[in-house]
Image (cartoon, rainbow, N blue to C red; front, top):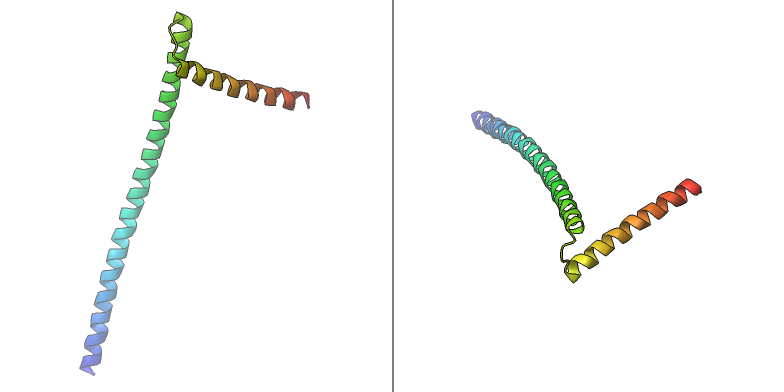
Length: 96
């Protein structure tokens, strides 16, 4: 019976080790999730800032009457088209 007791004891020890590893992995996983969330929020803030700066740059170009490349003109025209479509949708919803 002592062999069976030893096997049972070894099994319990291994189970305890697995539980400790599991708990450590759970803590690490939670930490990584929190880091990911912070990174996502930071990225979102950076994207908003980039968008804001691009708008400021466009406004400065328009204000200064600076020279626009064809790419800049096309990009601005596309943005204006998107804004006009959004305005049309809003007007349709208001009138509908």
